[in-house]
Length: 354
Image (cartoon, rainbow, N blue to C red; front, side):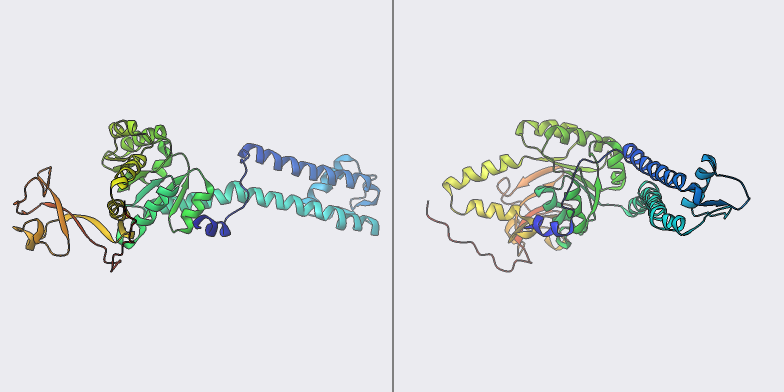
């Protein structure tokens, strides 16, 4: 549905682009053909052209000269068409050729120079405005979902820069309010254009684990302090991408396998876990925050409206099962589950019996 709605504002035809050199050569060839056609027409009608300087019959150099001053609309007036036939030829044949050549000149100048100048200027302005943003590489289902969550008020209202090779996906990203950048995320220049030096985090939501590993190495080399999150298809590549520099690596297929296996022997567990994984879209949320001054000295079940399941203290994660009598201290980091305020009532459909 999302793609169907976005397609109303997108091109319907995407073909392999011709190189800049070939496009420019093609346009030059069309301009030359137009000039040659005008020269041929004037050569055939040279007897109806009059030289104001009193020169005799016009030669090829005179015809070529008159063609160029006519096409460029300079019109010195030293050579002029004489008679109705010559004027009709100029109006009905030469004028369309003149307009065609001018349109080719203007279109070429716009596409190859002005448009590129405007895009480069917009790119510089966007890069200057970027800071503490999040880069999402790959705008498929996972990438678009992550970008939407990050840009939402609940997700921190982050500014998102999307890198993808697919123009259609980039147009979808632009419609969603993100900045789209077409390019290969494994290349230094592309990540630099996305402002990786000032970015808060970069997410790799790409299907190829090899590309994820290479792009992770590139990102870590460009910004040693950035937070890198990646997804991989094969579980065996988890450690590879971690060694490349990613702090968190997720294998969606592995998680799906765990959930499906758990659903064999449970009726609701999988639904609750899926709701937790839905983040801000679910009825329950997992939060990570510092302990508040009023919560210091309290135990696991003594904080209202949330269920604290673990804490981080001194670089060590301690669960409620490890120390049931633990009391919270200053600088503890809490991991808790609480109801999503945007979802006032949680309703779970009755599952069929096992």
